[in-house]
Length: 242
Ligand SMILES: Nc1ncnc2c1ncn2[C@@H]1O[C@H](COP(=O)(O)OP(=O)(O)OP(=O)(O)O)[C@@H](O)[C@H]1O
Image 1 (tube, rainbow, N blue to C red):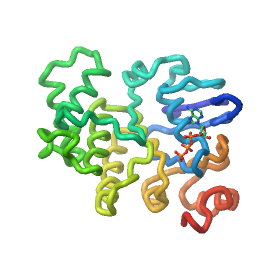
Image 2 (cartoon, rainbow, N blue to C red):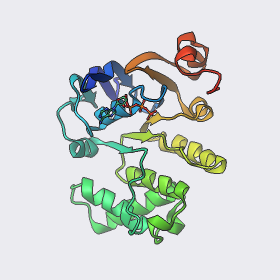
Image 3 (cartoon, rainbow, N blue to C red):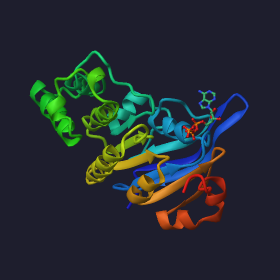
């Protein structure tokens, strides 16, 4: 099987700081991959490079067999890379339905009929459990539901790769449980790359885990391998985290 995503020597400098440092990374289709590491390790910068929000200082990114290093973000979305970021980006004064519709209309220009757009939007809302809130203003949804709405906005793009940056932050325990089930369901027909600080969520969900520290990938393996890795424990899984 060939990887869906491969980065080679991927680096990004901010002034004198090398936020991502020579990342060699690959992701197989259908995987749920967690990216972990201490604050400031470069995780968000890394996924921002993958989705094209920022440009690399060095290195290459291959997606589905094509070199996407120089492609702008919107073209990567069209190839099937969707993402949600830490900061909620829903439009508070639009309904949940309109938020998802906008996400589709803004990014996909494949001449979908209105009927097809509607069906896709409703499917994304029902997969995330929001169908009965479709008409509510996004700003009136609970924080947890706003996070789910963002995932719906990504799902409506029918992504091959869905990137989630700290999706469980601020969710209740019950919402986290629902989220874990949702990601498993999404992974039946997409690949999921998830930055997550909640270790029980990581250990439950991830097929494999990649660990960043100070911009570098310091370890990669199954949840059991990562848990047993001493370098990882030192860098990250200190007593405070497990
Ligand atoms: N736009 C930017 N300009 C300058 N420095 C930046 C910028 N974005 C990130 N950095 C720096 O790059 C480093 C990596 O940041 P990044 O947000 O990728 O880490 P992270 O692992 O996602 O952290 P967290 O877990 O806190 O979200 C940090 O030192 C950060 O301050």
